[in-house]
Image 1 (cartoon, rainbow, N blue to C red):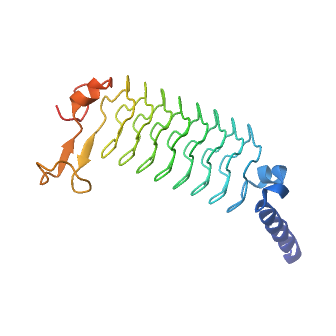
Image 2: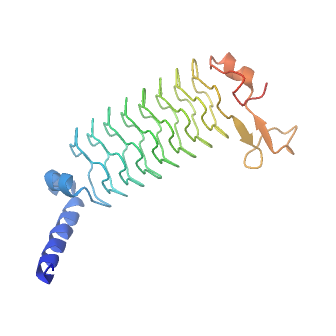
Length: 239
């Protein structure tokens, strides 16, 4: 049986560490790597390259401009985290939870976000070229002016996403859910849209003044091919 005094000692150690997390100047990296839990913490500018952060819990924390290159955050809980300006090249976020996370201005080339849940996240002005988002949940995400050259969105759910001004050259959207997606001024040359669903739900957005009664419409296939995208008969677009 664990004595009451031992339990209290463990609790004091944990609370002391949690309080220390609130200020990055006093941040204990080694203890954080051991406990892997620090919610609502200020981790801005922290150096954690090649760290094993699998299944860590850091919800609502600030990692602005941190260096987490090559680190593994698979299955981590990172909801509403601020990752703006971070360096996370080749980092792994497989099946992690990042609801409402902010990745604006981050450098995350070759990062692995496969099967991540990142609904309503903001990736504007980030560099995510060659990143892997296969099977990811990316509903209502913002990708304005984001670099996504040769990124993989195969079978991802991107419904309602906004790619205004993004560079999607060579990106793979094979069998992706692109319902209600906006590609305003995006570069989609050589982007693979085979099997992608480009339906627009007219009950949720303005489609055309000439036909407002229709429940759904499709992005025009010719406009996609004119922009250099790769489609086929399986692409759900307006023929």
